[in-house]
Length: 183
Image 1: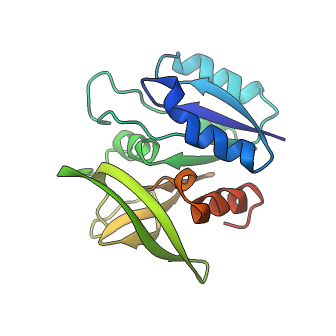
Image 2 (image 1 turned 180 degrees about the horizontal axis):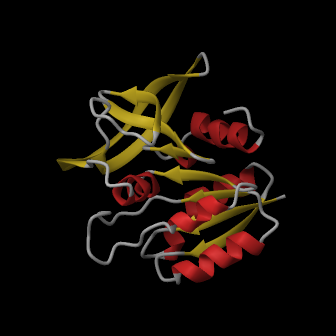
Image 3 (image 1 turned 45 degrees about the vertical axis):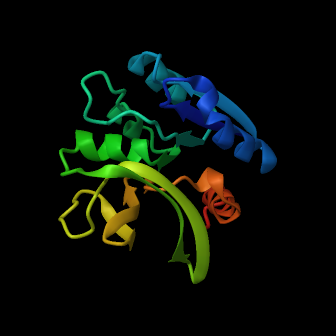
């Protein structure tokens, strides 16, 4: 089974953790580069593809920068696809939906623990931007927060994560559960 990976990184090799995670789980990664690609081309590739599960990666750029790549919202026309939006990708969706994104002065890099499906999980986060769990975030569905920051949200046929599941054992298990519809 192939899993699609859409890179939001300026340097394509930075997706190595996501790519290795998918391989370690026994799947074949199919990589697209949105940062340097053309949105419409990527939308057509996803539309025509037999791949049902697509992971959009994080990125070190600020989502509000003029030249920052944005996820094409046209992907949500394809109801037979499932998407996982990691960190920057969550921010891209929120930004395009005109939700208030907060920024902190210093990057927050840490392993933290969060209860998910009755299991305490160790997860990795690395981000400046975030959605406060104290605000109204419709049309996103807020599921889990940590220190008043939204960490897991749903939007249409996607799960949005403000952490990097590919960086911890528990996070990799989370990805596998998502693939098997257990998350």
